[in-house]
Length: 95
Image (cartoon, one colour):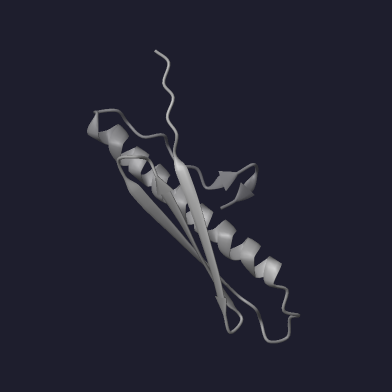
């Protein structure tokens, strides 16, 4: 059975005093899930705002992704199926 949905992700970034904060919000039409990320420029590093944006946004999106996987695992268990086993490696690298 075909299934198509349109989910919207909004990414908000703000920077203050060398700290970049990101918030990634997913709207599915029925639920809202928000991931958060932070990046801080070390005192000895050159301040490159784009790098802080990339790190904070990536961390917020990773947080959002982890939350979605957790929600899906809960939903899988709720319908009586067993979740996939977790591994401690990804592409040969330890997590």
